[in-house]
Structure formats: structure tokens, C-alpha cells
Length: 296
Image 1 (cartoon, rainbow, N blue to C red):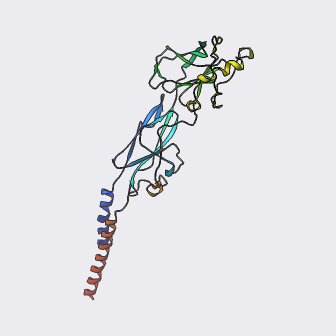
Image 2 (cartoon, rainbow, N blue to C red):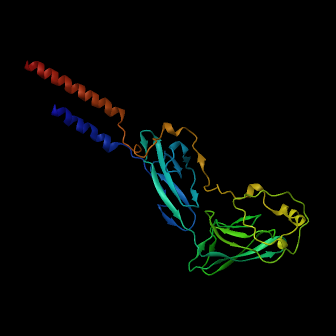
Image 3 (tube, rainbow, N blue to C red):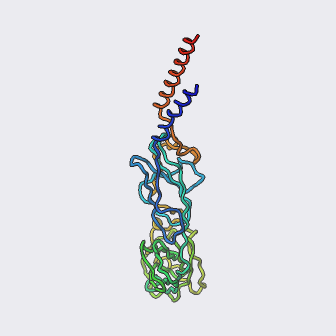
């Protein structure tokens, strides 16, 4: 009987040696960062499909199909995995990203400038340069996003211009939408455009606080005459736009992915090995039966 167990031992060796082990690598690795960055996912086999999610307690079918690098602006866990079929899939993996934005960036001054504009001066009071890409300067009627890659050197200043009607504060927000500074523009509107316009639609969740006195607020006629200069509702900032370029899964992932981390990535026995196991067991049984019969 020990010969049968010995044969079975060698039978299962190829299963562990030759079983495929798909993996996927996320770049960059877990860590703390000070500027938005792009996450790239690279499976170890070219034919694999890769998926990702920001919900550690979510389900595989809620994941997004990875097609392009993912822009991350806020601290978040990051879940990802790759699959070829049910017999060849990677483990469900998790990275943890922390984004801490500089507290040395401030609104140094803001002044009414020209026809319904504000001139805002941004200053870096720290000893290190700061990548200002994806930061926002907001008035009640414009959300100005600083271009990607703009560097503000230590102890330097940069001017920005945005639409301003004279009845609200100006707010500086980091890429994750945290309020970093607020300022009240000084001076009065010098020119008033007479172009008729429609009433704007502004998200109340990001409208800067109104702080000026009644005497400083322009008349209803003056406000309505400049609303045509503001951006359309489609250009308004949305707090829910936290990720870009995400594509929903286009097929039932339940058919090709496991639903838990503990199950994921297990080795699978190829059907050929099961047939060999059955044939060897049957042959061993026949031989033993024949030997016992001859001995009798």
C-alpha cells in the first residue's frame, strides 16, 4: 500500500511546480506623497485583464477595468488584481496611499482688477519648492485649476486672475478639495459690462463664504449684467470627480474572479493530472488483486 502513496506523492509534484502564477505590479508603491500622481498597473502576462477599486470591502464586480494610468489626488486604499481565467488569476492586492499637501502655500493678497476680475497673489512661505498642479483658486463664479506641473519655488509668488463679482471671498483648495486659505479681495469694481446674461448654477458645497458688508455688495443690475462671463454649469467643479479615466467592467466578473482574498491566487489541479491519478490508482488496485489471487 505504501507504494501507492509514494506514487501519489510524485503525481502531485508537477501540479505545484508547473501551475501558472499570474501577478500584477502597481507603481508607485504604498507610501506618503505630496503631489498628485498616476498609478500604473502591469500584469506579468500580456493576455491578462486588470481591475482596480478604491473600496477594500467591495466586491470584484464593482471594480473598474484598467486601461490607462489612474490619477490619484486624495489619500485612499487601492485594490487591484489581474485574471486570465478561473485557473489563472493573481491574488487581490492592496496598496495604501497617503497624500499630504503643503501647508506653506497661502493667498498673500487679492484685489479687484479691471472689469469684474480679481488679481490673486499666491505665495510659498516654505523652504522647499511645491508642485502646484491641480490646486484650485475659487471665487463665487469661477473655479481656476492650476495647470499640472507648475512649480512654485520657495519664498516666491505667482499672480492669478479669475472672475469676481465683488460679493464673496476667494478660497485656495488643495487637489483633494481641502480648504487651505481664504481671503477677501480689496477695492471696488471700476467697470461694469452691460451684456445681458443668464443666472449661473453653482454648487453650494464649494461656494466661498460671503463676508463683505451690504454697502460693498453691487446692485442687482450690476450682477446680472456680468453673469454671461462666467463658466457654464458643465465647467463647474464637482466634489465627486476624484478619479479620472475609469471604465466600468464590461462583463460578469463573477464568472472569472473569486470574491475573497483568502480564496484568490490558489493553485488549481489540471484535469490531465486527475485522469493520471485515477489511472494509476486503478492500475495499482488491479496489480494488488492479481498478486493476492496468485498467492492463494
